[in-house]
Length: 495
Image (cartoon, rainbow, N blue to C red):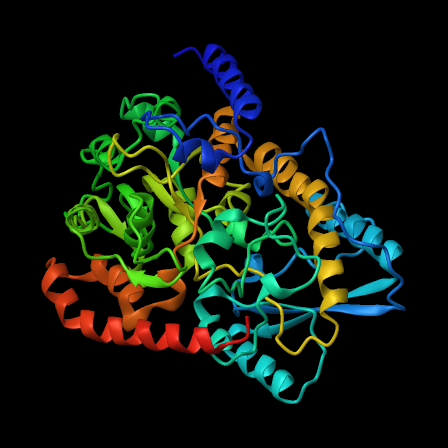
């Protein structure tokens, strides 16, 4: 298809989506058309800047120099994933840092507060938080712990039900409705994605492809496939199954060769979520229930095992023991047609000489009425509030005001300027980001991990044979017991 014609058509589709359906997720869920959701605009907290600005329904107060202190996780060696959304210096050339500075200046002037970032290794953060709560030391305004590690603070009663904080209106567009819906437990919300931070957006799963390799392998227009809803697991596999090449001629596929798909065990979990499957669903009373075992999910997992076990075509970083930076460099240096990524790779690969495009996580099949791009629990955090906060009203006013201001400053800088304009290599990838961000999902099973079910799915790509059904039967009782114990504890926590 002619590039200019495609761009024009794409722009028209996106404009129609903005006019007809502001919330991409609700558009997708209310349609049975195969590609209905793919041209929808992003969700409000995905970066779309409305022409009609909304304002937080909170009073302006003088908080006498109160220090808004964020307890934030980090992992050694993951410098590109450290917080860049809480504090910032003036006169930065970086678009995101500049937007954080301006946002904080507005809030500081309106409420007479200052901002502070306290970074703690993710392995030590829970201990630090618990000590503060036990000592009733009201030091931290918010907590941003890696989602993988957030369960213990919930169970220990160290986090406050955000629904109970005055002035915080979780129905507003600066709070991610998907996170509210999926992470609510017995009508309590202990962590939420918002426009205040960008770490969770960076943790959203996607697929990159080598544009030159796509041309060399005579692939169809992948952007158009994603746009019309035919971008599926089988379409992905069929497009790369014959592309692997033994470049060094030693009859053994290694880092010097060319692979169809460069990925890892995360492909299994993100493609599982991408099929619309969930480890845990919830009943009408907002109580979690196991939902991993059904015929469709078994079929999906079998297909994903087949895909990731073909080691001559699929490069599994976890089988080969390489780190994230080396993993990304392999694609940047032209050793793969496709590359499983999180969105933080888009900015990290900005200097790459390999021209690449961006696609959503594929559907399982064309009958699926939308895409699902899961947010990583391993590399991202959401926002929580310590349970011992002494002035919930002040906390609520500041969070609502900060989230609102972030929608029109930080999200614009991150999404429209940095991600879509600065880091994307073409207009089509920019449109794909609308699909990806607009179809972000969260699985509470990834956080609760009863009986190790999250790890069970994650580890499937490392198995020599698919024993999903028999292995699950061995885990099921322990998983049910673990989940019931978690539910009992949660129901005893303050509402």
